[in-house]
Length: 98
Image (tube, rainbow, N blue to C red; front, side, top):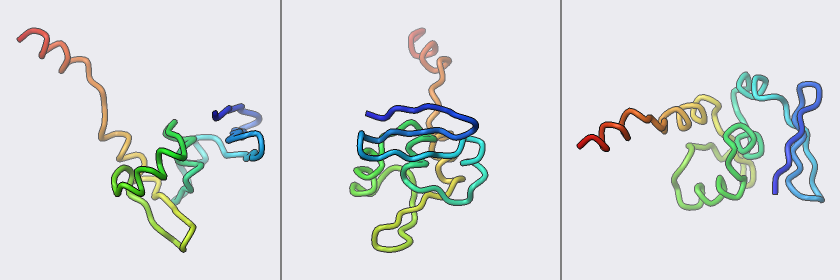
């Protein structure tokens, strides 16, 4: 279970009781050219395990494999992935009228 706390522009994410990481705020993350999986999870609200599973299934957000264990996501790719999936209520109203 992820727990988030924002303190002075930094977001503390408790991935488990063993690991604690401090992440920059969302505005600071958006200025970085590349993001790691923890930063993408914090930005998108998706679990790290979901990102890993989608990579295994070869779907989801495009990523770069920098080394054997180092995965990076381009910030524009993350934003494009999120913006490509809007939920509009106009389409639901139009379908209900038919």
